[in-house]
Image (cartoon, rainbow, N blue to C red; front, side):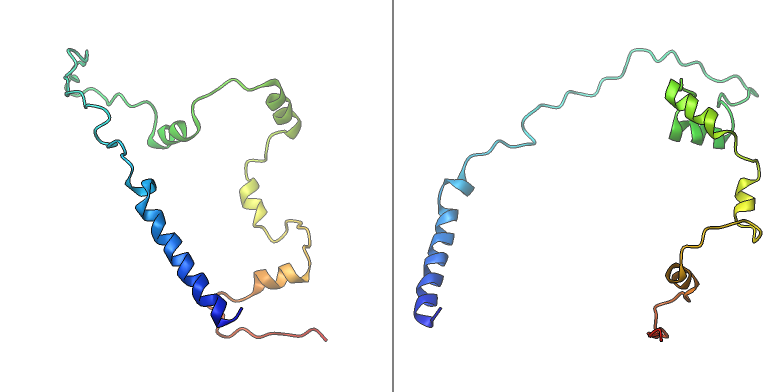
Length: 136
């Protein structure tokens, strides 16, 4: 485009853009989102049926903190479906020390190739001492 076409096109776009704000699009009446519903007054319930704890009585918490955490995260015991039960039966039980034996040097592993090995063995850091090696 030449300068002769660019200047009128720019003026036309600015005029059209300024006309958008003058119309009913931005000036329309909107409801106030905070005034839509009245807030009900706070009411104290008549009775909680709470009994004060007896002096020296143990805390009513069920189980240890770790058990309560697991309960909150994963829920309590639930019925397993037939498919889930079948899959767990076929998988069998894991050895008790499986996590310890995974990191053992005697554990058999699958070779993922030179590239993966080099990525894992690369020094950590920002890469200031990194060098490009061209295989020959």
